[in-house]
Amino acid sequence: MSDKLHISNEMKQLDRKNQKFYDELTPEERKKFGLFPLIRWASTVQADSEIQAYYVMSTNENFNKHFFNINKHPKLQWMCATAVSPGVGTFRHDWIPHKKQSVDNKTTKFLRELYPHLKDDEIELLRTINTKDDFKQLARDHGWDDKRIKSDL
Image 1 (cartoon, rainbow, N blue to C red):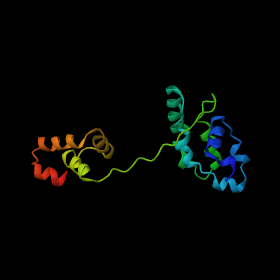
Image 2: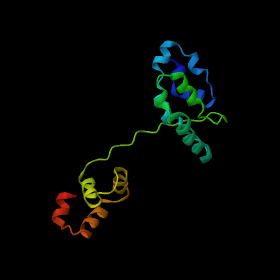
Image 3: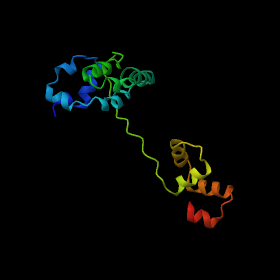
Image 4: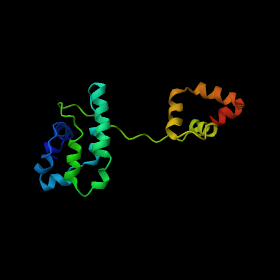
């Protein structure tokens, strides 16, 4: 893969608002150029909190919002990507990993039974901020005996 299609260069071109970058790619490079992953890369920068907030909001408004509506026009998608940058320099962009799926273990099943109205991310948050002892106490508070706690939690 050419240096042009390295993510650090692509983000540099985005930050510099280089609208001609897409035009400068060869037909073969255009086939390899993935615009969709740039949404995740573009939205996160290592900078002060105001710049970070700007990139998140600008990426959503200028790049992400209508991305799939213009999917037959990659040059236009790239131009929308360049609209993300405030034009105040280049920044290090970080990848935002996909949200992990909730582990469906005994603790998760227990929490779903107690709190059926909670969303997956709320269940996951409860799992991460509490200890095993916290869950055992919660089970006792809900009338579980030690035998059931041992087998079901």
